[in-house]
Amino acid sequence: MQRSTIEWLNQINRDFYRATASEFDATRQAAWRGWERLLAEIDKPVESALDLGCGNGRFALFLAARQARPFRYIGVDSNAELLAQARRQLTQAAKVDANLVESDIVLGELPRHSAQLVTLFGLIHHVPGFTRRRELIASAADCVAPGGYLALAAWRFYERERFRRRIVPWGGDIAVEKHDYLLDWRRGQRALRYCHYVDDDEHAVLVAASGLAVIADFRADGAEGDLNRYTVLRKG
Image (cartoon, rainbow, N blue to C red):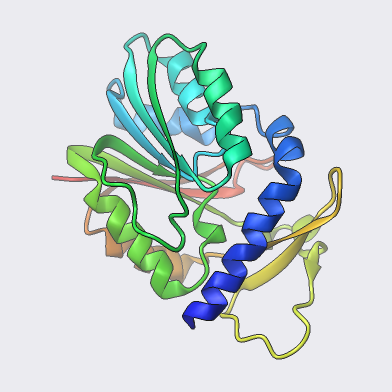
């Protein structure tokens, strides 16, 4: 995919989150059920976490509620309003030593942090271009401390009729890739977001790009319990 197309698709999503940040935050407070399974697979306290695409920081709040030990948390997101929501909530979480970073990791490099647990939740479907998605997974794996973990969740929205009904035609001669879609948002004001459906074949390639060992692969979340495909990997 051309750089100009990646930038254009990424700007669609930046505009989307600027327009919907308040509604998105209000509807994204509950923890994902798959996170419980993730902690069970790791089976040890999390001492540090790098949350890529952290949004309003709800994964940090989930960790704080599930373990007694304090931990270091680095949350990275490109949306200032969602980061402000995260900051307000995390200042009240005594066990969380939080560092929130505003950065567009879709277009740029990851912040140079190392953590025991690196997560990509609700992110990979917003990354335009197969090559860029593969590069991002490899870079995220480089941020995992020795003996640590990388957790990836891919949103399998295209498998649900209710999401397919939200697909909007691209219009014109747009050079997007297979499984690239525009979805409309129907809560509060109307807005469009770019989403990519990661199928099983691509998921396998992305996981291989990490160079890490798979310790778990499962489906969770949503009403049917399978809306996200999780893969948990370990370094060393």
